[in-house]
Amino acid sequence: MLIVLLIAAFLLTSCKKDSQVNNGTNAATGASANNFLSADTYKSLNVEIQYMPGYKPDDASLNNFKSFLKARLNKPDGINFIQREISPQSGKALSVNDIILIENNSRSLFSSANGMAAYILITDGEYAAGNRVLGIAYRNTSVALFGKTIHENSGNIGQTSREKLETTVLDHEFGHLFGLVDNGSPMQQNHLDAAHGKHCNNPDCLMYYASETTDILGILLTGNIPQPDANCIADLRANGGK
Image (cartoon, rainbow, N blue to C red; front, side, top):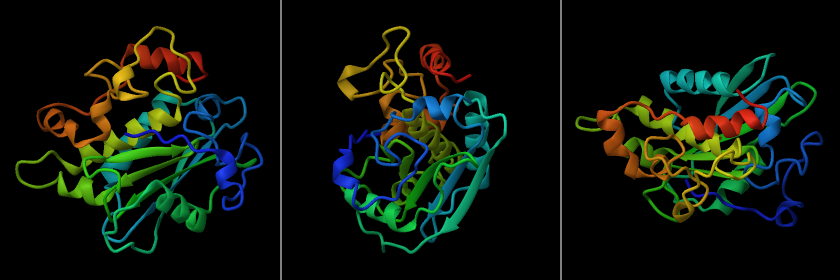
């Protein structure tokens, strides 16, 4: 995944506000890590999933994703998913600015006394910065999955299953929202892959850079959905998670 650091001032005039999270939904990826991980501010999490026609996530993928969240987050009042189909983009390759505009116009859930909120957009096109990218985390509570690229590379004969690929990308991108690696949840031991940005240096870890690109396909074809390694789990626990 490519982590995009956004300057809050650039978005102030266009983004809806969340009064309970510092800098609302405009902050950089990882800025709300502790709010996700701990129960100090929010005891529940509401995840808004918006998908374009033909790209509704598999139920099995979402079940796996919820299990991942429950295993890592202290949210005693529960984790809820709300799904909605939104207007297509006709397969257009989308930039980060395009994705932000869609979120600004479509997102309806924001953190409040009812719990923390996160946003997932699943597009009908590729990422404008590269068609090998499967997903990005681009704000403190927001991720996007590139549905066209995911569908083209999974679910057919000789390919990995849709469930395995969707689950991996969802888990990986939310790992970035949780502050991994060294981007909101401080490292307890050095395991940063400096050559690939905020990723883990363990090729068997969920947070290895390959999990956000088509480089993961061969691994998933013969292996299991990657899990966070001991170093990543230690970072999450030190910042309020499980």
